[in-house]
Image (cartoon, rainbow, N blue to C red; front, side, top):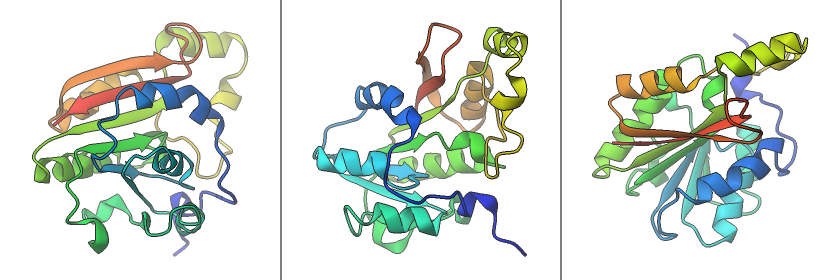
Length: 208
């Protein structure tokens, strides 16, 4: 059996992606005190988690990509671990850490089973006495999708030829329904980038 494409995402270096610039400030406004442990689920090459570590935050990251984890550990060794959330279990060195914040940045659109991921985060937060999940993902809504179609950009935007690319296209409503199904509450979603209802991304905070 071939390796799943999400494990071969193609990380080659520690450089940021285009979305990091747009999402950094909205996420920072939601983060807890710097000493409160944060788990970055789907940390990729570790760029954002390492940036937080450099700023004094307490952060650990997990990802299914061995290449991403190897790159992430170059800056802060021992903070990043290979882990597939479908296993429903953290790597052993992380199991005793009381994570009250779980961050999932530009990951949920790549997952065959996004419910598995948000339930993984829910269970982890409950074990720590409750906390918050912060999720970001590209925004999709009627007006934006209509604008993309009228501009003749639908094939490019939906990225059908991108190996390991987006397979879920989230609106505010569908993301809210997913989180409600998983038992989250106080779900708040804000747009990031461009103008209202043509946003590039959504930043969502939900509480357990």
